[in-house]
Length: 333
Image (cartoon, rainbow, N blue to C red; front, top):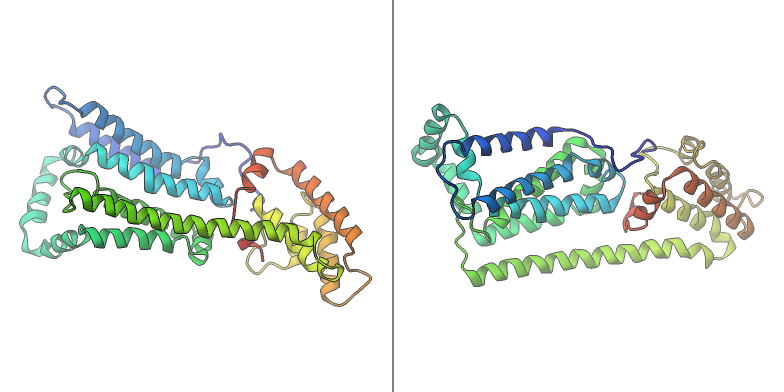
């Protein structure tokens, strides 16, 4: 995506804002007519609105646009939707108050149906099943790991609908997870205090494993960046070209699915004109042409030219943050 955010002050607007405004309206309506505030009401209200603000920051801010191109921004989204908004909302215990905000003519029959109607007994059994400690732990961690698989990660970036499903799955499973640890009626956890510690500790282990995988991915990125300087001349057309593509992917420029190398170079001609010559030399070497190949001197010249063009066409904050992306090389085709 060549057209991208140029300033972090660019807010997007979207469905998340509607959801947050609806939740806030129910919360405020449910608080009308109540007697004097009880102990803890103020900090719970602050926790509730902080949780809503975290959702907006994740899904309705410049972060959402950046997450389409930058790995670190996508990971910050995940942290907000998994580790910030859900525990804040669980601490706030807003569910009874929000339910009181629903009109009584709708609230009472729905409450009777959900709690006593035989027709809804399968739903009640499903809720009890999902609320089990082991089941909720497995659902949360399997969902967390699955969306970090490169296949699903890339698919979510290509499809807006799948990206929305990813965010909903993260938030819903995290809310299920945190309400097993934090008392948040009417959701009740069957875990004792020692079991809660084990529950959290086992999840930390999963997070550490994922962190190790990402660290290894960053080492691969560094190796791909450095290897052209160590490679024999005959390998430079391939490894040097790949290294430049890695650098372009860091700042949000990658070949689209089905796009030829020449088409990619033409698309970036205005921003990175040297890429066209580098691509021609790469393809010439691949086709066996010695004259149009890439010798070490030409590689150093083109590498400097591409670096200068990237610096002049991408803002400094974007380039700096792109360096933090351990999986930019995965998007290189």
